[in-house]
Length: 166
Image 1: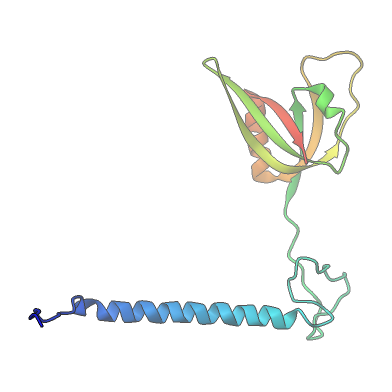
Image 2: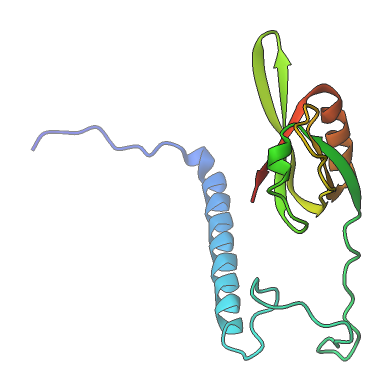
């Protein structure tokens, strides 16, 4: 049998790092298994799991399991923003309650650029359209958060606006 040089294990200096990494992985795995077990255990009750997407919100006079009234977060602050859409025929398709994306199309140095200014904005009012063709588009009132309303006003000053229906 031929003689082989002794086998030396390298990396003895990094054993502490490897050990710590192994512990972190084991802790993460344990947390994931615990969370899955809690979710599975909550699926069986008649009331459903807390925070489940299909769960309906409690009614106004509802009480929490502790007997205290349920507190709801305040509704998000929205503004009614009148927006002029470039294509009046598109506005005829809209009804109050529809959700739309508002897109700003800008002409810059011969190249067009489009960007989404508002996502899933709620149509609150569609004023009556004037008879005959109009080149300046049509007005629609959207309910949007304050920051989105500012973006809409800024975009309407520099670009033509269009909507896509949800």
